Length: 258
Figure: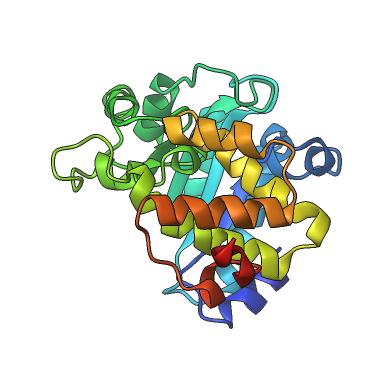
């Protein structure tokens, strides 16, 4: 970990982040991610080694869950991270065993905040502005980290910060469409053809929790292939008067003429 951190630091990132929260079985099976929370001394050793391996002025942050099977060692792990040199800690307020099942236990983050002297950021089950406000109230944190909530509503961070002009929805379907076109272009230029349509449908599946238009799109594209997505996206852009240059946004520019 230290060796890799040093190599990454040489590329000039804003910081190095360590993830002690991943619940994936393939990661945990090899002793990584949230599984490490069963061994706070190993967590401490990793943070210390990484901290020593990168420039002193480069932030080293960490993310953790409340624990692996239970939260009995949540504070112990947080203290291990803080005292080993981390400059910031994000806490996903669930254990690995709790996965992504609601609720998130934001009040347990308050216990962690009281035990460490570094900034603590709350994470977990934040889908709306109201969720963010409740999370900050229960955890005592002044900052939150968004995960799936930002995939469902790409404007959620702006809304939470109060920069959405008084609205709780900073991004509308129309303002989202150019981003979707850009995403589709990236997918089509970087992924195997068999996986392209699935990636857009995966995002639409999240978006339909927030946007009624995404529900309509998801149903229309459930069995779609690449060319079907191109035609749908071109038509949707045109219907809403959104300008998107074909060389930038679409995998097959001919779709604009369809």
